[in-house]
Length: 269
Image (tube, rainbow, N blue to C red; front, side, top):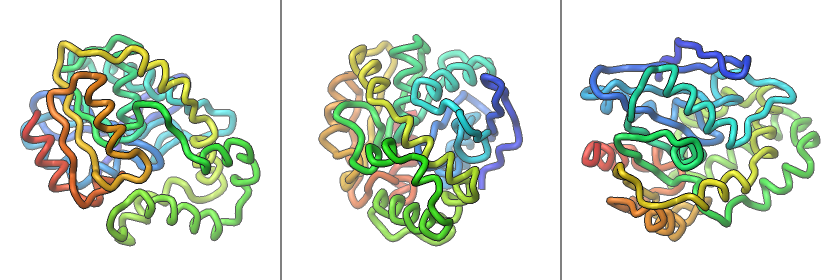
């Protein structure tokens, strides 16, 4: 497991982060409902030649959760910008998955942060986006937050299994479930879903263009959350240097094919 033993204060809220390795800076940005632990199988190998930074987004993992918290995509991208400044990094390489990819894209195309290279995997990045489940939670957030623990856990297990091509190991399920249990965790989980706003995707997408730095895109071919076609569309919109489909992998490519994702990253870093 990755150790997130450092703390950063952002908008009076605590963000957990950690770093391993030495060398060029490389920032890993997770998605939802994952945490920095989604990189646990990959980060140690990237750290052999890089200083790898990772963190839990606001409202996720070990970072602060709380009522009335703003955990929208706009806030998460601003957090990434603030962390890069806090770490004193100049043009780092960044790897983003799912909403982490959107945070990284917004950090550049909305906030003006430049990278050495940007690597994206199954990222929330182009419209249309969202699902009937997200819309339903947005309409009934309080009802979902009040689910009994056993019902919430069953829903969570079904949700993350649908993101994976292969049956998830129990240790992986427990790793991802742990931050979302209990009254605070349940409320935080549904809060993240309810605050998802396609306007934050649109704001970034309207500005997509060829960049001065390389962008590499990898995609699990069997992703039922964000289809492969949207990965190809993203690749074209940003004039990516490479687009690599990953066979026998769905949205949670870290679990389905960590070796393949690591190989792609090492080939392009």
